[in-house]
Length: 365
Image 1 (cartoon, rainbow, N blue to C red):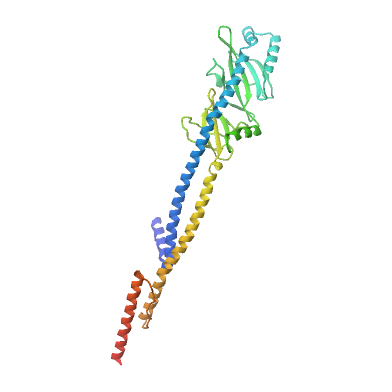
Image 2: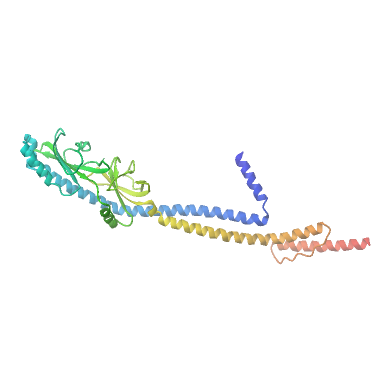
C-alpha cells in the first residue's frame, strides 16, 4: 500500500509539471541513473584491479621476506644447538653438578649473548624443571614453553608470547648424551622487536608503503615487529586472496605466507588508503564528468523542450483566441517536422474559419 501511494505521489508530481519542465527533468533523471550505474561498475572494476595489482606486488616480495626470516631463525637455532652440545652442559645434566660448576656454566651462558634481543638462556631437565637461567633483562624467569612439547627431539622455534606489551619467542634445542638420549633442553628467549627506524629502512627495500606483520599460525598473537597488534583471528594459508584487517584503527591489505621451519606466519601489507588512492582519484574524475554531463544534458533538454513547447504555446494562444470569438493571425513556424505540419494545418484552418465568418457576415447583412 505504501509503495502504491509513493507511485501515485510521484505521478502527481510529474503531472503538475509543465511539458517544458517535465522533459528536462526526465532526461536528467535518466542521465543520472546511467551515470550512477556506470560509475558504480567502473569503480568496482578499478578497485578490484587495484587490489589485484597490490596482491601481485605483495606476493612477489613476501616469498623473499619469509625466506629471509626462516634463514635468520635457522642461524639462531644452529647457535642454540651448539650451546646444547657443550660438554660441560651435558656433564652437568648427567651428574647433577656442583655449585662451582653451576657458576662456570652461568658464566658460559652469559657469554653466548650476541645482541640486545637475547633476553635469557635456560637449561631444563627432562622433567622440564629449570636447572640454570642466565637473564639479561628485568623480565621474570620464563616457564618451559609448552608450545614446544609437540617436537622435543630437534631444534625448533616456539610460538610468540606477549609479556608486558613486549613479544618474545623461544629457541629450543635438546641436550643429548653420548648414546643420543635426551637428558635436558636449552631454551633461549629472544625479544621479537626492532626499532622503527630500522624497520623503515628495511621496508624501503620492499617498495612504497609496505608493512610487515608476524604472528602465530593459530592467530593467537600478532606483532608489527614493535608491539602486539590486533591481527586477523583466523588465517587460511591455502588461499592466496588478500587479507583485510585493522591492526590499529586503519585498514590493511596483506598477503600471508608460512615462515618455513617455524610456527609463524608472516604478512606483508599496505594500507588500504594507499591501494585505493588511484581509485579515489578515478572516482573524483567520474563525479566531475558526471556533473558536466548532467549540466550539458539539462541544457540540451531545456532547449529541446523549448523548441517543442514554444510552437505549441503559439498554437494554444491562437486556438484560445478563435474559441473566444476573436481572430488570430497565421502561425509563423518554419519547420518541416510534425509540429510544422500541425502549424500549416492550423493556418489553413484559420483561413477557412475566417472565410466562413466573412461569408456568414455578408449573408446576415
